[in-house]
Length: 560
Ligand SMILES: O=C(O)c1cc(C(=O)O)c2c(n1)C(=O)C(=O)c1cc(C(=O)O)[nH]c1-2
Ligand SMILES: [Ca+2]
Image (cartoon, rainbow, N blue to C red; front, side):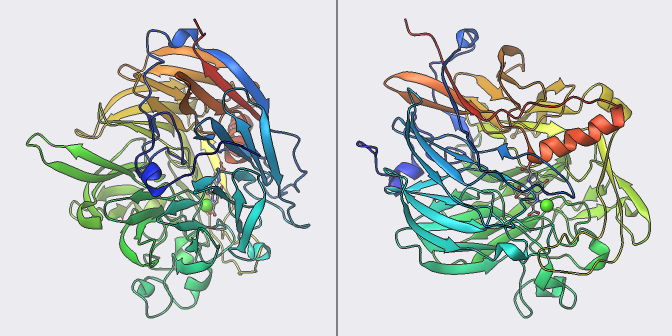
């Protein structure tokens, strides 16, 4: 039992104290940036570990034999006035003291027999009042008492036996808890669902694929809408002023666009949902009739850019998995294309329409039945899910990318069967010759000019979510050497690093308790970073294995 727990109010979520990290990307706009300044470029070299805390022991999960992967830690530590919450990929939630690492409680959900997780991971908790919310691999949304870890309510999002599973952290806005499910590789029909945060009562369920007669339904032939994918597996961002939640929608199913001719709305899009009603008020589709498994699930970062004449540009900026950056206008809660450009080599788009942003395709890179078609980047995209951060003082986005890898699909007809992979192709990934130099990189982009400021290359892929701080620092893990690094935000110079007990694909977080600033990060290598590395090892004849880790590490400056 946590004796002294601070209630999470709408005001606190909208304007969090500098010391706290109350939600996935800290703020509703998804910036993932900490305003704390105690740790600086000058003193970051002195960071030392304050405590570490193993998240195990774990529950044994079945292995997905078609594409094996280990369970991964992808949750940020969520921090509320000295209390830390962490989730584990196997259905556990842990509450601990953010200064000592002492455990307050541990919740353990038993997953059903027969569940075979294809992406065994969980991306964290959401807070509201004295409760917290978490989704599960058997596609439930549950509420726990934040003080005790006792379950308050449990709602079924969908039947896991039909290929639905959840990996995302929920989003709470104005008393409504929102969540959705994965399953883009199983021919689900994706949705965002809203629940009353107190009672768990379902308020609305909005499908990412319209039914016949609904707007956008003409973009699906025949019955394809019923099994068209459009999963939701990354937490949305929330525009407090417009009362609009921006959710990213994943790939269409099956993977091969020729099997469902049409734009396939709202797959590979951002949709703006009103949390009160579930109504879709705006959308922007990055690429139509997806054939590359380029889930566009990461929501745009919401940026209010001060202009030269005192006006404010209301932007939504996105680094798409398809390899292009999109600068969108979100004025009045309506997404409108401004400009786009590639941030990694991509050979699928010839261009974007300057008015609508709709891409024109290079037909040679679009999957065709009975033919092997190559395209760059591979299905894992220029970026996958790991989050970027945004420093409002310097108008800069920091993002982990992967380049110098291409994919191929050989399309075939496929029959839908509930709970069975529904792809229409195998999966290939080949590193290019340039990959011997580097695959992963950390890029810094000025969103005013849309120019790249710097790039740091890593020989290894980079699957690290990014944290920037007002101390002028950028923290990221993500590489296969299990290193956690800090860079100078202005120059990209590496200022500090430490080798941990496993690869890092969880978001680093910064918080403060009693006047001391902390940096926390959790090791836990697995899922697609691991699969991606498997293809590289196969191509280059390497056998390197990345330690799985599974430990929360917390750093601070030495106390004087
Ligand atoms: O279509 C889907 O429903 C779905 C779900 C997930 C997931 O829930 O983690 C991933 C993907 N797709 C996917 O395409 C992908 O590359 C991916 C990487 C990861 C990961 O945890 O590293 N998850 C997922
Ligand atoms: Ca997918």
